[in-house]
Structure formats: C-alpha cells, structure tokens
Image (tube, rainbow, N blue to C red; front, top):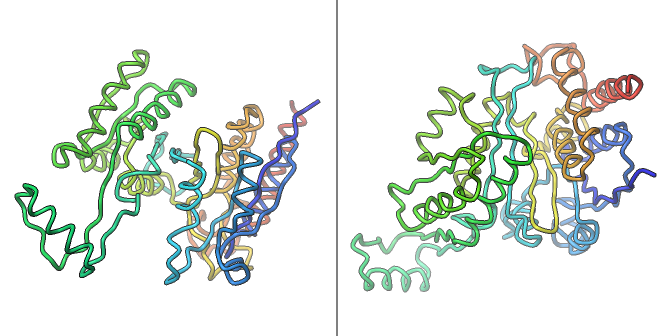
Length: 368
C-alpha cells in the first residue's frame, strides 16, 4: 500500500491561497497520497491572533516534519521581522536550497543554466544582532571596540550590525552542499566568500569549506570571491554547479540565479534542517493581485517537486518536472509573465495553469 504523507499546508496571504490551491491539486494529480493539515498564517491571521505565525503553525510542522507554504506578507512597522526568518530560526532550518534551471520556452538570455544554490540560513548579518544608532548600548559597544585595538574608528553616529560565522554552522552547511551534490550526481561545489577582505568571518567560512571538501574526493571543489561569482554567473552561468554561500551572499545570488532562468515566478525554494523541512516559492505575496487568478503558480509547483524528492517520491517528482517543462515549452497555458508580451490576451490564469499541468500528469500516468 502506498504511503500517505501528512503535510502541513500553509496557504499564505495575498495571492498565496490561489497558487497554493493550484499546487495542491497538481501534487495530488501525481498519484502520491497526501493528508493535508491546513494552517493559516500571515497578515490576515495577525489581525485576529496578534501574530502572523501562531504557535499552532509551528506545532503542526514539528508534528508532521514537512510543510509547504504559499507566500506570506511581512508586516510593516510591527516589529515582527519575517515569518520566513522566524520559521528558519524556530525549526532549525539551516539550509536554504534554491535550484535555478533553464527550461525551453522561458523568456531568458540564457538556455543552459542548471545551478544549485545552497545558502546558510541562521548566521551572518541575518542573525539579527544589531545596535541602533544613538542608543546607549551602541555607544558603549563603539567605545569598547575603540579601546580594544580597533585601528579604524567607528563614528558615534553609526548603526552597527554583527556578522557571526561559526565553524559549526559553516561545516554543517558545506557538508549539506556536498551531500546534495553526491546524491544528485553533481560534479562540483563552489564555496563563495569575501575572505580577501573579511579575514575572520569569511576567512573562517573558506577554511572550513576547504577542510570539508577533503572528505569528498569524488566531487570537485573550488572557492570563488563573491563579486567574481556574480560576474561569472552573468558571463558563463553554464560553468557553475553547486554554490554554497553564507547567508547574505546566498540571498543576493539566489535572486541573481532566478533572473538567469526567467525570474522569481519560476524559482522554487526549500528550507531544510536535521528534523524539519519547509517548501515555498521564493517570490512575495503580490497582494495587489489578490483574487484575480493572475499570478504564476509555477514557483510553488516546482517547490512541490522538491518536496516530493525530499519525501523519496522520486518518480512522481520527475513526472511533475516533465509536466511543468512541457507546459512551459508549449507556451499556451501560461500566465502573462511568461508570454512574449505581458499583455498577450491568450495568457491564462493561476488555476488554468494547474489544469494544464494536471492534464500532462494524467497523460504520463496513462503511458506508465
């Protein structure tokens, strides 16, 4: 009897529920059995419960181990930084996985991109250790740094952010990148850094990456300075493979990679830890399009493909990828952002993209 996967299902807000519903239908059409535990989160929930991420959502993910979510709006001016950041920190989701792959039919300057970006999720400048300009503790920190051998003086009217990068965190994320490369038969891992300038943080990241690489003699290894990485990705993206990066660089390079393959509408994402995993599209909630059946759902569908792989439903994941690729290549049942002209009247809606992908899946199931 086929396994039934219990998955926490978070529709999100803005256009999230629309693309989440289309994705749910597509995932069920693969033939994999799911039991969805629906949990509401986001800006609408905040108005009712005082937080966009209620404890019940975290409890559900901890129970089920796996979640898929639509985009969620980050409230402005509330003191709550981000639902996505909170999920990563609360659940120990230290690895952000962002595949960037070319598919025929996508409007792009490139056609041979197949990059895996592995971003460390918990450290670096995103750790949230900040000191506000003018506060007593900030002035005290500046004074302490000045009195402990800091050659370059920090102005008293400065805000200060701390960039922690640890041996533990670096080793963990670099091993994740190499294990992923080995599992999916990738040839090379690139460690991306700025160790030529930031000797003690990025320098540590580089040295630990070099040590970990020695444990994987079957996989090639190279380090790249982050600014050179940007140039190489734009000039010769086909030469890159698996990139492992600290948090900030990973955030920036992920969007660069998405731009190489058609934009955030096709950019899936996964946040993975030792116990839990959350799969999500990388774009925002686009609230101005709420209820219009207009937004491209493919990023979340590709995220569902990643979830199927994580659940060891490999055959279903491959069929879903082929179905999505076929719909993209045909170019008929796609949203406005994937047409040659964004005002093309033949563009279809969110739900209709789901219908087209399901039709492709049903054909492959019949042939199988």
